Length: 337
Ligand SMILES: [Zn+2]
Picture 1 (cartoon, helix red, strand yellow):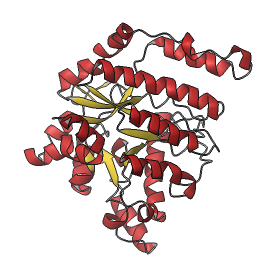
Picture 2 (cartoon, protein in one colour; picture 1 turned 135 degrees about the vertical axis):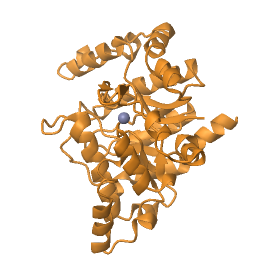
Picture 3 (cartoon, protein in one colour; picture 1 turned 180 degrees about the vertical axis):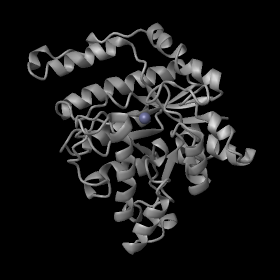
Picture 4 (cartoon, protein in one colour; picture 1 turned 60 degrees about the horizontal axis):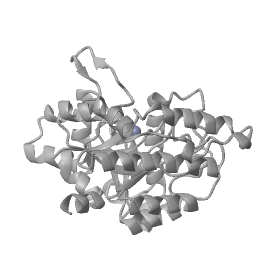
């Protein structure tokens, strides 16, 4: 079985964008706020939006199940207030639930959280519980709800503890995933995403988060940002700072996906990082959509890189499914049930 741990609903019907545009426009005139009921998307529209995209690519590329969450770039937690974010988040999560309901063999849900700059995480805790009750198996946690200005405390700060407590209680992992960048210095997927991945890892080295939450599991996407390539730097910094060895201090709790989009990058990831910490992911359809002229294949067809990695079949299975089933126990229970 091949489980893709990283897929977003980037192809949702345009009515969703129309609703969001109206919601944002109404921030200036709350009387114009669209009702949730005004957003109408039929099951056929959802089927059409998936059949020619994610489902087609699953079939063509040979993956079985995608761990599926709302489009990351449009979470945009920096827009509006906590209540803006809650309304938008619940709409996006409910759409994921409908995708899963229509294609339960192809998708399983991961939720967006209604974060908002400076707001406490109580609303996110409630939404996580609501989504767990709907069968979701994890969450995307935005380390920077300000969208590129980094006004939130580090992920190791007690500010974040309510959501970690809930994740542990529910035995769910979270993917550390930023949203759009409203800081023009940082291109969203080219800089902001990779910055955030790298930043999260360094914060985990500096803090003692996993002493307080020994069973918490966090996935750093996009191949772990700059971390695997600079593994010696991070090991050396931890040593200089008198931190414990990374295998004990961070890597019992942190996992990287395979969204690096070229063979040498995957080969490096597999060589440097313990295979137990690597989950297969593609982030399709999404971040990079084109064809690599040097290979003639889509950049985000990441299964090819694992297939061609030279790993044994047993090791490939760890990356394709076994590690994911360990990190997402609710998925394992779902498949067994
Ligand atoms: Zn993503």
